[in-house]
Length: 373
Ligand code: PLP
Image (cartoon, rainbow, N blue to C red; front, top):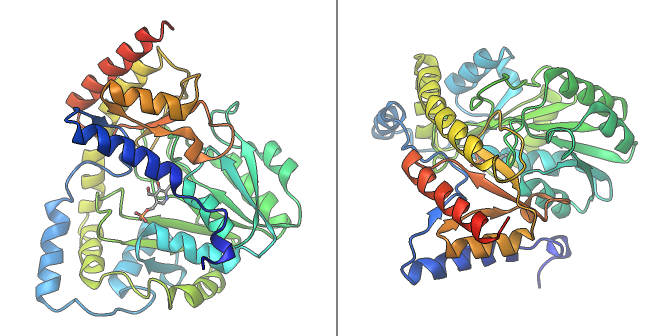
């Protein structure tokens, strides 16, 4: 029998949208998917080549739980921390669940700004915690220190922050983020700052909250190097916090793939990392500008400042909208997946070619016209 910790966790909505899209495809419909949560670019050759070399050289076994020395050093130098504050994980997701199991107390409260990445809700439920959401729709999809202070008390064990944000692309300003961290610290709460999109930004540079005693920074290379299938993530936190997470990591991810760690270390240490990221970001910027300019004429949204998502107020039930839009040849993600107050929102991902985005925008415009809006 399924354990009670999974009682409130559902996969039905994701499954339903998946089934709707699959059915339409089987019927031969031409569907452009704006649901993709990863860069559409191939993993760069600059990563693949050293990975193949490392595999041939025998980097195919366990590594230290903390990750290989070169990669820890490369990450530490990049973020200006000590290598002893870095732990490599099997993707950002493993880092998130390690941190959740390490710091979310049963029956405590977990603060999650809405809209947010679905997984945070799942981790909180798995840990049998109570979820308290902060509505951010009126403040450009970022929580203010004031709204945060209002919701805080000593029952809160963990606060999730994620900027640049999935699903909105919002970036919080550094001062507000630091103020939130300070308030959390005063209540003895840990902030899990998911910075997996920190390299994908267009306007203001996202803050890296690496230098705070109560913050666990979660990051990884899935998005920045278009390598979601390689499973390389990392956490940066004080050693004491890393040691708590090690208790989970040693029986969970154990270690990230050895050859993949080697390849990422090489790309970071030889200076290619920044170049590869900036090439990808300049493409994303063109797409962001295009979809924002076109779709913001039809639906209310906030201009995304990072990641590759935009969150639109479609002013009707998001499930109905998403299902009807399939008939026009476009798949989007219903906003319901991202927390409360999002029933009339949908997420679009512009991790797709400009050519496909142009077609998708035309189809959305046609849908919008047909609604007589
Ligand atoms: N955090 C956020 C906000 C994400 O959007 C994702 C993936 O979509 C992840 C974490 C997970 O990243 P990874 O593939 O490295 O596990």
